[in-house]
Picture 1 (cartoon, rainbow, N blue to C red):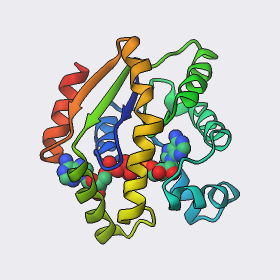
Picture 2: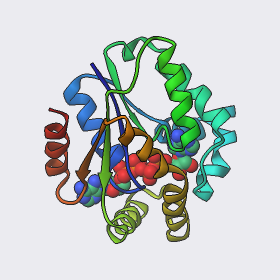
Picture 3: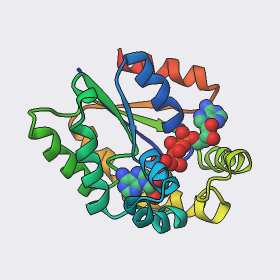
Picture 4: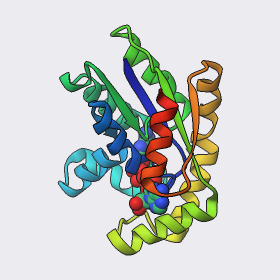
Length: 187
Ligand code: B4P
């Protein structure tokens, strides 16, 4: 069973790799960031609620995020597995995900930790800012997102390490090279 999570700092390549890996494994990639951005674009109530948090590089409140993920994981396409990208992002969300999965007697099988150094992360995100103009990709907000990652997201890795399900993958190099490393780590 492929119930997977990809975690790493902003710019490590989570979203980039999640799409490729999910396609390869024939499971859906579920990116909370993408779901938020779609809602912001469509100006839904959820999008209006999330926008100020995302633009400032802060986490969207757990109450909003947890509800959204619970609904997404209830969809039929997750029956044979899924690849979560960007959720859980703090320890409270880890516990919420445990409860959501326990309700259907499931648990996460593997956590992929994608790593890259801070200079590379900032360079990639500034490059994306120039190409795509994402509102949270400016240097001040990028630095803040890295700090939020260290303070709120990095601690959850220890929880999954204790469960023995973490595989660390080097996120530096060509995108295809990183994809190959992830697929080998999953085998
Ligand atoms: P995300 O959408 O998850 O944004 P991200 O951390 O910046 O990563 P992303 O996946 O987009 O980028 P990637 O590293 O693939 O979150 C955005 C915001 O949403 C958060 O700040 C927060 O406010 C909110 N949010 C999301 N989930 C939440 C949750 N669970 N709880 C609360 N709030 C939540 O790629 C970055 C760039 O690097 C790309 O341009 C890519 O092309 C490039 N790249 C990738 N791999 C590369 C490689 N090997 N070489 C060169 N460039 C590469």
